[in-house]
Amino acid sequence: MIDLRSDTVTRPGAAMRDAMHAAPVGDDVWGDDPTVARFEAAVAERTGKAAALLFPSGTQSNLAALLAHCQRGDEYIAGQQAHTYKYEGGGAAVLGGIQPQPIAHAEDGTLPLAAIAAAIKPDDFHFARTRLLALENTIGGRVLDAGYVAAATDLARAQGLATHLDGARLFNAAVATATPLDALCAPFDTVSLCFSKGLGAPMGSALAGSLELIDAARRWRKVLGGGMRQSGIIAAACHYALEHQVADLACDHRRAARLAEGLRALPALEVEYQATNMVFLKVPEAHVAPLQAWLAERDILVELLYATRLVVHRDLDDDAIERVLEAFTDYFTTRTA
Image (tube, rainbow, N blue to C red):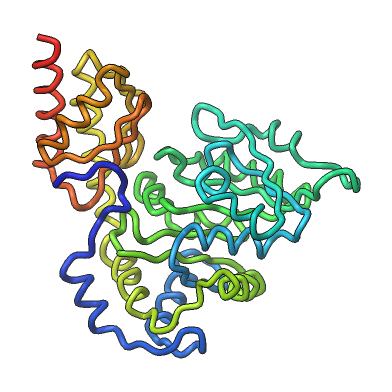
């Protein structure tokens, strides 16, 4: 099966499973799990932050960060397409009484600086208190320009705002730009990192930041139901990915570029762009359902919409990409002949 729906579908390999099996564990709610402690220390070191905290999911990691930064009646600024705003169930508003202030993205995935500045509320009891700027890197597969990140976070700090980065795919950004992870994390007060996407762990994210913010996030993690017991089994998988599978992301990027190149040769499709491990394309509406069925019959899973995302990951090799291109080509050759 070739699954292009997301890089969350990756499965742990034999070496990762061995690491999970061999991990010494304890009760992490009591602070007794040595494998978790080692992993969190490694994440803190890699990100250049004072501390880190293991979470079962990136959604919970992001939410704990928002709750650590903001009080009820506060607001955070984020993009209209940001995961924290659009794809996490409105958790900040539902559970924290925190108001999101969404901003439309520019074509490159950034939030225009002028729009950020305009969204910051004056200190007036008529308004929610603007407390936080939340960015995402990568966003739609695109890497945020380092100069833009510096300018946006400088603007936030000058206005007294904290900064959070949803770095679910920050390792992709690091590999794509050959930039150390700590350099990408430096402009932010907190950073959430996911290990269950391109890095291939079965679950797990980590939040990195100051001791004070991580202490607050630890309390919120418990409230949110994220306090886990022998979670060293999870931490071992994440730590293995951190130590052994980051560089492999370059292969995903190369294969995504090949996939985009091949699809561009099909006149019936419009490849909007390819960035890191993602290919975005438009499929004519008349072909959405039959093409999806055609691909499924050939053991290729996609989620075809009018605007479609194909995600390349470590469980797909070069032959898989060529099989996908062959299936797309055969479909359009047959249907348009």
